[in-house]
Length: 530
Picture 1 (tube, rainbow, N blue to C red):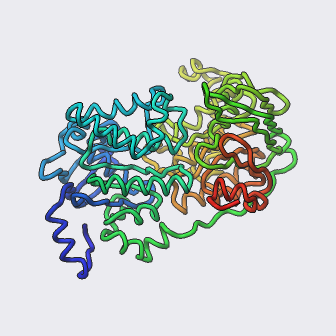
Picture 2: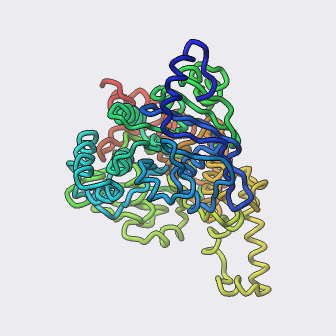
C-alpha cells in the first residue's frame, strides 16, 4: 500500500514482497465514454484485509468488477493498466476463469438465488471448486461459520432475513475455496448488531488464510477490521496506508466517520393534502411461510399525512410487512385497510391503483434509460392514450405526454433531480439513484408511499439529502409514508410515530421519544438490557 510511515517501513516492505493481488495504473470506462477509474494502483499482501473506502460514485464497486472480470456485463471495460494474481495476469480472463484462479466476488445487494434452497445456493457456489474433496471441506467450514445455514438448508433462500441472506452470499463465495475474497458492501442495510457479526466473520475468514478486499460505506467497520485501506474519490486514489492511520486522519474522520446531521421532523402537510393521503389500518396481521411465522398479530395505524416508521432487528418481519401492504405477499390472517378499502387479497397493480406506491432496498430502475424516462414510466397508469398511441406519437398522445412530462419535471425539481433529468440512471451516484427511485414512486401520484431502506448504504451527505427530499415531498404533496430503515438517527429525525417489531411481533408503538426509552426496544433492537 501507499503512504507508509517510517515506523512501519520495514514491515511494509516485507509485506509488499509477498504481494498476492496487484493492481497497477488501472483505468476503466463505461459505454466507452464515462471514465470511472483513472490510474488506480493497489497492492494486496497475502493474508491481509484491505479496505476500500469512498463515497458513492467514487469507483469502489468498479474496482471490484475489474478485478473479478464482471465489468462487461455492466458495459464497462478496462482501458489501461494491469491486474495480476501471484504474477499471473487476470485481464482478458472471463469471470469463471478468474474464480477458478482463486478470486471470488460477493456482489453488493446479496443477489442470492431466492427461489433455490439454502443448500442449492451453496452447491452453486461450489461449482468453481477444484474437486469434490475441496467442496466438502468448504461446506463444513461454511456451516461452522454460519450454523443457521446448516439448520435452514432446505428453506427457500428468499425467505431468509437480510442478515441471513448476506451470510448465505458470503458462504456461497467461500464454497469456491477462494484465495482472495472480494466483498462489496457486506453491511449494506443490516442492523448494527448484524454488522458487528459480519465484521467478526470477516476476521475469522481472514484468520483461516483467505485474503480479503473489502468495499464498505461503513468506514468505521471497514477500518476496524482492515490492515490497510484505500480511499477513492472521483475514480482516483486520494489516500492510502495502514487502516489505523486513515482512521485517525482528520479528512477521513470528518467525512466518513462523523455523526450525520439529521433533518428535523418535517412540518405537517396542509389539511386538504393530508385528507388526500387517507388512513392505513393494519389489524392483527399474520404471515406464515410453511411452518415459519414471519408476522404474528401485528397491528398499527398510519394517520393521514404522517410519517410512520417500522423498525426492529434484522429478521423482525419489517420487509415482510411492506410486501403484504404492497400485495407481493399474501397474509395468512388479519386485515389491511387503506381509505376504508380492504387491501388483503388484491394484486400489486390493484393496490397501486388505489394510491399506494413503493420504493425498494435494492434499486429497481432501468439503468440504461434516462431519469426522465424512468419517471414517466410511473405515469403510464394515469395516461389515457395508451402505449400504442404514445409509440405512434399521435397528436393527442403527444399533448398528454407533454402534460405528464411537465408534472414529472416538477417532482424532479422538488427532489433536486432536474440537473440530471436527461442523464442515464447508470451514470448517477448511488445516492442520486435512490432519490430517482423515490421520485418515480411519487410520480404515480400516491397518497401513501412505502419506503424500504431509503438511506441504506448512503454517506452522511446523501442521507441528509434523502431526508430533505422526503420532507419536501411530504410537505408539498401531502403524502403519508411507512418507512423501514435501520438508521435509527434517520428514523428518529423524520418519524411522527414508530412501531417496533421483534421476531414478527409488535413490542412497542408510540412517538419516537417514547420508543427510544422503551426497555424492550433497547433490549431487542439497540442491544440494551430490559
